[in-house]
Length: 474
Ligand code: MLT
Ligand code: ZN
Image (tube, rainbow, N blue to C red; front, side):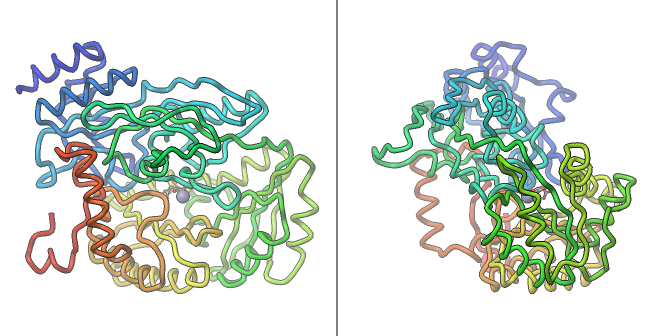
């Protein structure tokens, strides 16, 4: 099928205005927001309803084109933009889900709402807050990242220690299989056991098994009283000890974010502000948030008045809290800005290790960055041992990733905590999954997507040792 006839057939489903063919219109859908991942698309199709998604998939299958699902395009592992070079096995269509952004059936008593896959996290939050509730998920990319993308990657963010990851928030799902059949249910019954659980199957499947079109999502209480503290601890070990104490004793605890000094300096320079506390080079900084129906400040301060805390800045009113949180929320933006000077996009590794291994992980990541000659900017979500290792000016990303990810696996950790595997980490899946496990996952993929048209290359494990030796790294 020619590109022109593909555009015509998809235009007859979604309307010609929602098929983007021109280079200028497609460009923003073909590169991720770090600028590291990029590939060409035949066109971008923007369905506005579930039945349109189904019909688009049927026609793409008939046309022999691959489908790359995308919504907010805030993914960080190359999973939501077309494949480049050898990985682009057939022409690809970007299936943009942004128009599926309706919020419906808000039920304050059941503490649930239904959101289209293209609903942003910020809009989910606004709808929850309109009925005196809140979202269990929050992260810095909230204004662009979407519910569908968060399900696809099993995103987490800062509130995971209190409410769990995205997987735990999906009480119902609607999705379209590659052949156009619609599966799932949006009833949201907390107790319903009728065979397999589609939310569990699809959360974390990164658009490879089906296209999520809508989800029934959990809501949580909204707390009027929030306190935010920036804390300096003398060592990583002291930070972990403090985090453990806070988790055991402070019931209003909402977030414990870790920011290493280099990261704090970078974001402070980007913001043009001095951090409110002095931070030594070997210190570890925590940004802690507590939220409750009554003021949790005293509860938090009581625990900070002890060993292992060298400096604290506390904010209880909204403007001061926002100013403090900016040192964490705007880190990714600061890293992207700094990467422009280095001439290469930032190189990101999202990993998690058991808490006792956070310090060795930071040591090995520091060694790996020094060997490469790049600058390591480390931060993350301490309660889950989840570190975002960002590298500026990296020379050999493949060697760096290999060293760090093998180290992570040796420490009992995982190669992806909340950003997904995408195409970036497929070569290291064997480090944390057995061959039998990966074969079973591939069998599920084949059963649901026999043509392999949904997000090809993503989550497609290959053994780097074997394939490198054979010269076959795809
Ligand atoms: C974050 O926690 O800010 C994100 O996961 C994004 C990132 O690592 O850049
Ligand atoms: Zn994160």
